Amino acid sequence: MSDAKISGICGVDEAGRGPVIGPMVVAGVKVDDESALIKLRVRDSKKCTKARREKLANKIKEICEWRVERISAFEIDKMRERMTINEIEVLYFSKIIADLRPSVAYVDSADANEMGFAIALKSHLRACMGMDGEKISVISRHGADDIYAVVSAASIIAKVERDAEIKRIEEELGVEIGSGYPSDKRTVDFLLNWVREHGELPPYTRKSWKTVKKIIYKVGHLDI
Image 1: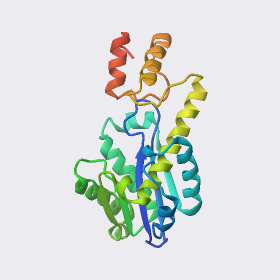
Image 2: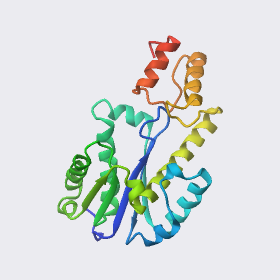
Image 3: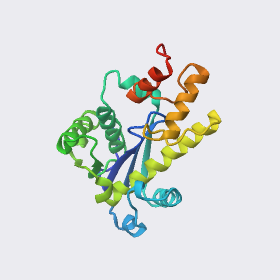
Image 4: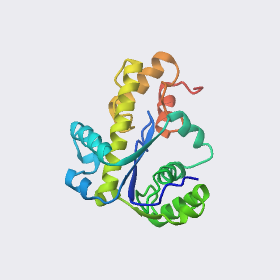
């Protein structure tokens, strides 16, 4: 157990919960107060241009304590054999909170039940931190990245880190894969073409996703 003091506030958010390709990235940001982040005019990463997100991410990292966890497609598939995606988020959100050790943690709720998500996080914090976990208040809200600057900052870092992972995957495979989301035609076309050409799913694909199973069925490779 760490001897670091429980202090400050942190925000935690993820990027890449729903894609069929690439990791889910969970980021946490800790500050004494939000004034510096408010001055930066941080906004939810979905509302920023890519260039602005990258600039903001660098500035946030300079003035805040931060942590990032990357959960690969393979790890997600393995954990999904016994856990829901919400439970996976609870696991990694609590890991980051335990590492940052804030007095208050603001989180973007992954569950329809905001209170239920907070209770699950508190349970994990108690399990991994003992009595120190009791000292941390958890505030779980839908759209927390629009409400709290510290969660907006975490959202920005998570998005930038995931974008970097997607770029790295494209460079490794030598082909454009789109955003990795099932709503992206470029991503779906990439998956279809790869399976037709190689007879198997490409690396970094979440094989447990329904969209992937539909693509396999469409192409006719039912044995993948």
